[in-house]
Length: 356
Ligand code: SAH
Image (cartoon, rainbow, N blue to C red; front, side, top):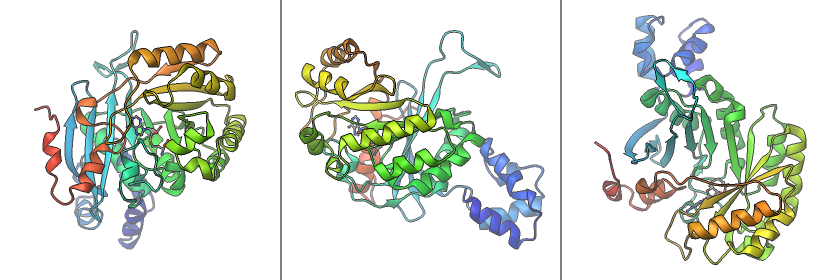
């Protein structure tokens, strides 16, 4: 919902100032439409229905993976495909009760741009045309979609397509609203290629957001090959900015490292990674590669475990990311990249494994 449009519409209609907050409270708690807002006058609900779209996005497709992951493809008002993934995890032992149901973490993965101006060579989004920055409403409306469809959502990661720190206005605008939906700043992570001006601006906000850095190679030449942005913002400078972020926020920075067979997964590369990371600042998350149309192949589970062990031997905490939603192309940009390449006929979507 476009809150600026809502506010200006209410003003034009001569409504009291508290109305916008009242309506947003309903929306952020999962109301399906204006009509459900029972303490808003009926006539006003009708007027709003005509002048304020309940969502800035229309849902085009939804795919359900066998592991409970849901991926949705939306269109913006100007026809751009954007996606979002909801990862639902089993309730941990001793977990909290929500009403009569016990639920585990529900994490939203959301994109910040349509396409991406960066060209990481292993990433499906990097091959798409860059469209534009998404607005705060276009980000928030995906959280609201899942809030309405499946109940509370408690984590968010900006790890969908695009570079969030190149769209800080949209991303920070959304982050300010996410707690109303149930996603606190501490449970919101922003992943970046290492866009230094963005890291600095993020450090200046009062929000204790989690920073995640896509590192992928400690060696400068290899990193530049995988992520050409490394030529503009070289890794040593990026690590300085991350240290400054840590010092301001006192929140560990998560390093993302996508495991590419025979490219960045050898033992000496783990040792080199450990060498440049201060264990008091960084935690490493090893990401199994989700195959895209590229020359790359994912490392074997054995190679990933060996890499992890080598990091740990050097005192670095490392985890391996659980791969989720593989049967529905849940990796960054995969669904929207297809939707763009086949625009306007969404043929490839029929291949998705849709659960009845
Ligand atoms: N631009 C931001 C956020 C988007 S991608 C960034 O780069 O951090 C989120 C993470 O997914 C990044 O670490 C990215 O490198 C990784 N990624 C992209 N394509 C992938 C793929 N096919 N398999 C596994 N991880 C991938």
